[in-house]
Image (cartoon, rainbow, N blue to C red; front, side):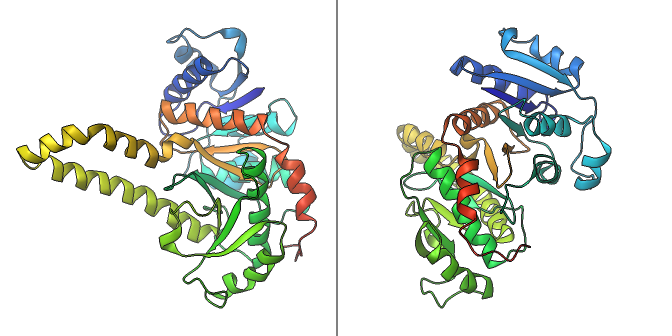
Length: 336
């Protein structure tokens, strides 16, 4: 396995990227890595760790695409950026997967225009794994497509089902659509039009998923447009942080609660780990002719380690791309 990593993507690059790579390489010895970015800066960080240098290649890319730049223009103009060089490695078959915590827009544009869409796919989609009461579920789309048509949601369900089955081994993963009620007649025009398409798609469609059910663990896949998905994702991250802050303030408010907190500390640590989105590394970008993982921009070393494990699992799993290619052709399409 050869994993390409954008060493200059993210708020804490390249230090957190290199440290995360070191941690991941201690866990598994069955992959090599191509780091894209400024060679001198990468080499300086690598020297801080005892790497097996036979497993690392540096691909010099002196330019960096920032989040302030217009993504499509930046991809075209900055041919020597760490993102573009990494995308080319995947597009040319020189790397099995690319991980980047850089500009989301640039990663999505690069994947769409350079790695290119799978034939028949209308809109590629971002799909993170999110913790729930029972098991992680996949939310698709979480921001790549703010406006969607019913056909897009049906394809999202097919793509996510291929991943959850082929990579995570979930047999007939349960699919739900975000809705404001359980009935088929509920929802906005998009949801009501998508409902029959999902019901007839080659997926295990279980119907509506109301907001209070999202984290129940009853669904393996939750489908929605990217605008709704991004709000769900950001709200979940914000609420988890606020909840633990309020809990900590309350537990530290008196001697009695401090004693109780000390006794319950192992349980709190376990819950926090289960709710920590950084344990999952990032989101897969499904629908393109290559494996792309968009890592969180604020990733630290532990999160990059998780993203590399995610990439490794993606490579070792079934050929998700071929399954998607064979499945989307069975769905109705408006070609837009």
